[in-house]
Image 1 (cartoon, rainbow, N blue to C red):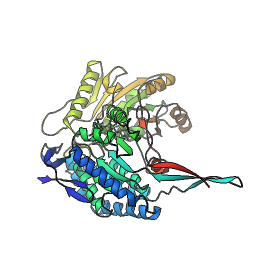
Image 2 (cartoon, helix red, strand yellow):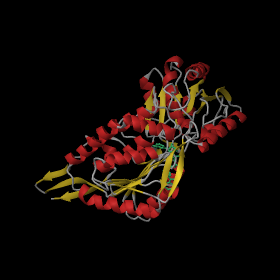
Image 3 (cartoon, rainbow, N blue to C red):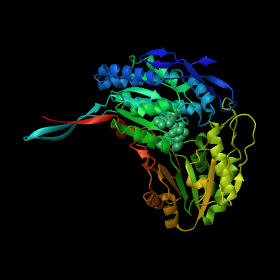
Image 4 (cartoon, rainbow, N blue to C red):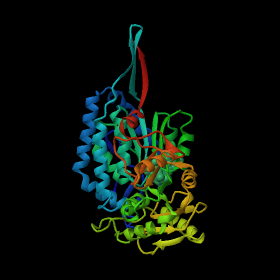
Length: 468
Ligand code: NAD
């Protein structure tokens, strides 16, 4: 079993203590995660601050080239990274799994490398010239979750360094190994200290949020942890980007075709086994096609192979960890107890690994946990509606506001409904599609700020206005 090390100031750093990382498909040990101390975190912040002195002076072209070199490194090592990711996260190599995630990391890195933020001239008159410049902020702390660990690490690290900052990244203690490997690879092409990784338990995240040497923190994770991060960041007035939990609603309008939309609905809800922030988590279907939508969705779901992530046959894998598995199972039980009709799945078969079957529950409504809370797993509730105004109000009746979707043949009508949803992104006849040039972020309690594109890059800068 491999013992991993931290990577600080361009060098591997040993720790006294480690924790085993388990394969969610088998329960076997994948490797040993180094348990950093707050002293290690301090060393990483010091290394990042030292590297910032020179990194912030790099030209835009040099920064872009460095990001492109990282993309090439990830690409060269993509199969090894994908296997490590599957081993610790559980997602299959195939389908929309590990290879897809690593490919996404490469694509986002390349796209971000090419984004420029030119100086804006706000005024140029005989009275004077006013210019808006964007400057790097300093040391960026990055805290990532366990669902898409490599891609999200790249979403944090790449725009940060592209804008001239340096980084300390702390991955989730559930999936730290692929991020350590990613940072090692980045260090093959970056100057020492530009990107550092510390791993350990949640206290390291809390210490980062309060750390006086970290100027900006970018956090992706649950809403409850995001609130703690914000509270801990108060004393240092850190800049924050918070990408938090979602409870995305999808509304199927009466003119949708149940057969045509089944595949899109399925992957909107079950990509990565439902463990995605912007998954479709509550589906509202008009009474006139309710049964037909349930039927076509179940027919599609019945043919998806679920199994060990390393098997080339698997299209979905296990839930990532025991805690999440128990949450999903308890929400399904609560829905069943409140009259929910389980159309498929709904029974944890026991056995090795954290497997839970693809589950679809009909005849549920608000007032049960599967609808009201973020299940973050392979269980979708389907709610019947008759009145459009009521269903829009219900879709909005949740503290989360990440994504949403509207399904129907009349796109103009669907867009009208989309405009009434309280969320950062709305998709029509699909759910969860993201791309590196389109800003993505939550409203309400799903977060603060956006990622991707020029808007996302600007979050890693501060404005300096120059009157010349
Ligand atoms: P989590 O909040 O439990 O953990 C996220 C990270 O925060 C981990 O690295 C964890 O170690 C760290 N952490 C824990 N306690 C901390 C503290 N007190 N201070 C600072 N850091 C701390 O989330 P998770 O279970 O890993 O991920 C699932 C959640 O993430 C879901 O709610 C999902 O919707 C959300 N998510 C959101 C987005 C988005 O872009 N909006 C993307 C992916 C996941």
